[in-house]
Length: 367
DNA sequence: TCTCCAAATATACT
DNA sequence: TCAAGTATATTTGGAGA
Image (cartoon, rainbow, N blue to C red; front, side, top):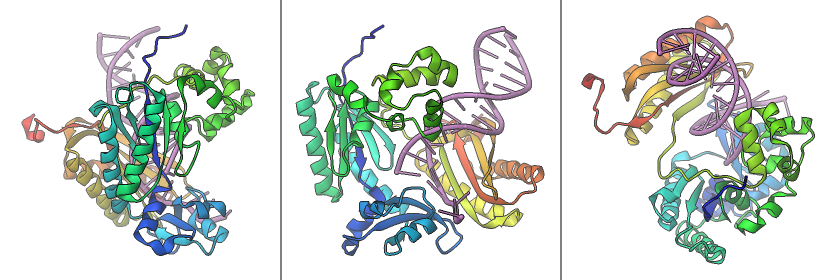
């Protein structure tokens, strides 16, 4: 059963409390204070959710995704700041450039999100984990020297373990998990710590009596498959054994581009809804153009005032990157939502997918 | 009944 | 209690082979 796996050395770099760290860097007077970066809806005051907070804020119980009002009640002295996404994107781009330059090659880099990435250094470190650790330290220093923010690094034989290693010691840590240490590294962890297992899967596993990764690792695959289906069941078994053959995705961007925002008030007022929709579509088109991609399908999301979410999507006969087509189609879909339900809308979103390079074909008239 | 693929929902993470 | 935003993965269901 043992499969032949080509040995690899994968590094995962995770910026420490990224948004809050950048705010601290930009305004040194924030040092020593609890800093909470919030995503405010456009409903004024403190309606919104916490995006990131620094460690002083976390000590008082503030967490990502927590409603800002609750965060405020937990720590009224904390500094609450609105997200400045564009600034963070700029910093992110610089950090990613550093990381990319440390990878074996173009394919050996994968940006996971604005503040984390994988790089493969199998060749550069000649598969030697001591050399790999030195490289990790140098990468941390380079980021610190250039951007004056810290990160945590995990080094391991695959993405799964590297990702988990980077969160093992935070902030400003480095954790190396050699191939022979993978099993011991995972053994004592609760299943929730496995990257890819969230609340839902955790609870389902509890129901069949599995709490730790080692219990999961020794669980019968067939039992997992009967509870979770073939692909997820097998994934769980392999992940618990520290196996993850997935390659890095190279430098390609996301497969989807989306925007979502709250209405000022819960409403089903058409001009209000379409005004916001138009704004969101503008942003999506700008992003798509910047990436030089066409899209072939789109999805409209509505979150109703009771927080129930509903989506409708549409696939076009061919890929385009056209604001008017997107707007007209999204409008049609939105009208359906209005017909089908009498409930007020709280948030709406637009997303385009099925992205393809726009090089070659110019526009729909070429067809 | 199998396969493809579009549509809708579920899940994860910050 | 109050409750944002972005992205990916999985499931569902209908049409054609």
